Amino acid sequence: MPELPEVEVVRLGLDRHVVGRTMAAVEVLHPRAIRRHEPGPLDFAGRLAGRGLVAAVRRGKYLWLELDGRTEALLTHLGMSGQMLVQPVGTPDEKHLRVRISFADGGPELRFVDQRTFGGLAVTELAEVDGTLLPDPVAHIGRDPMDPAFDPERAVAALRAKRTELKRALLDQTLVSGIGNIYADEALWRSRLHWARPTAGLTRPAARLVLAAATEVMAEALGAGGTSFDSLYVNVNGQSGYFDRSLAVYGKTGQPCPRCGTLIAREPFMNRSSYFCRVCQRPPVSGQR
DNA sequence: GGCGTTACCTGGAGGC
DNA sequence: TGCCTCCAGGTAACGC
Image 1 (cartoon, protein in one colour):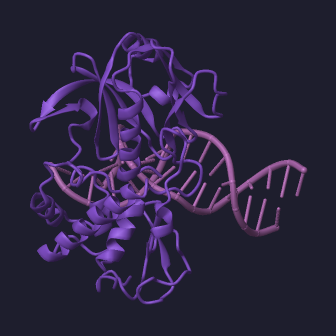
Image 2: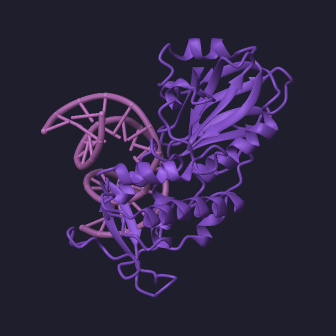
């Protein structure tokens, strides 16, 4: 599942393979893939054809390609299963190919492939927010820990100001962006905090600890090329990352905790799952978890 | 306004 | 073999 490290790997690939090139034609094979581009497929294709790509930028899990003139961008969110692939012209279409972008130089084309269609593309306006040029739909997203302007103490304060469960706050992209279910569970395990711990009453050191752990685990994952459990997550060349070999708790139900040996537990959380160690990560007293 | 819940979507895995 | 159900989960819309 693409979270911050996986999206950054894709951004690096786009920066290398498509920035500096001019789009020639855009083919939308599934309208849902551009559902956030309200004027529809014809407008989407028309606004991209003939335009140059000048930069590949990311905030959290959002990724965009700035268009020449720097007033618009091709915005992407990979959702759960989205891939941005750079493929030689003539390569057989992927089963779930949604959008194809060909280039004026006749070189490799850019393909948006998405099995579950939670992801999508849109052409959006760019506007300056807090000194940074952002697509409109990204304006409310907080800075991520890889952002040079990320302010850890501001994030600590925002986390402690919430009145909810700790994991729910970690997944809130308006506080700190880029953290998804996998890295939230790993960060909580590293900081020995239970996912249901209330943010109210969370000490400043504890908040610093869990945010530092999230930053650390995502940096390690980036170094490993991202996390992959199946063929759904790949970089622009179609290669999977291998950070999943380093995960301590995510998806490890029934396996021993790498720290104490207790079997890893799984509990339902927000229509998904939380993986944790019942001994290392003591549940909050009032929650009886 | 803040928080919690739900819909969206597809395909693999497992049970019967 | 075929059918059914469950599960994966990021985001936005909705209700309280």
